[in-house]
Amino acid sequence: MSHDHGSMAGIDSSDDTSSSTSSTSHDVMPMVFQWAMQTPIYSYAFTPKSTSQYVGALVFLIVLSIIYRALVAYKSHKESTWREEEKARKVIIAGQFHDDKASADVSTREVRGTAPWRWRVDPPRALLSMVNIGLHYLLMFAVMTLNVGYFFAVLFGVFVGDLVFSRYGH
Image (cartoon, rainbow, N blue to C red; front, side):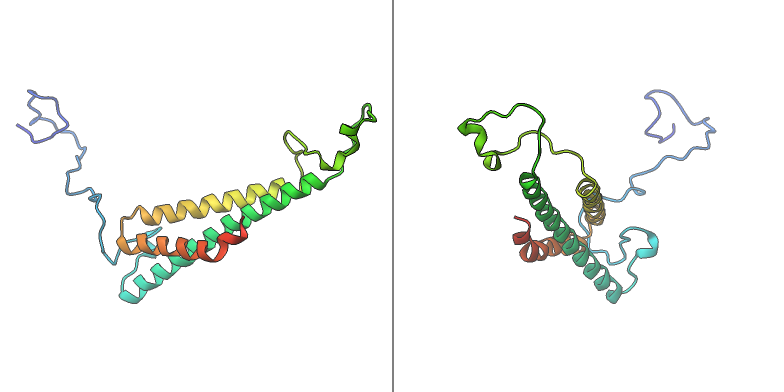
């Protein structure tokens, strides 16, 4: 009887001449945190081979995390700026003008609805979102290696980035 766990119970698969190989539990990386210094980050070419390279990888992840948080704060700041600019825009609407007190103070009324699409606002907003989510995924992939050093490097970088830049985003 074969020890193939993928075959159906009660069927002898010893004559099976299939060329497929089954993966065993030894082939799968365990889902536990580990301290292995030679953990690849984004490719096998970016695998630390010495202590100094590992420290360099940690510094890289810290800097990448700080840049990520700086861009998040910058995008938040720009969103606030764009919102204020939209409120300050003078919009002329064709139609009737009523000479009553409610329509006399047009500048204090808040514009409701969606802002119009503008070249000066929407492409930069989309670009910032794309770069932010790209950096977010790169940091997530580094953490998903389950290397404790990488994990703490990302956390430390996020902490420093928020400590330095978060006040500018609000």
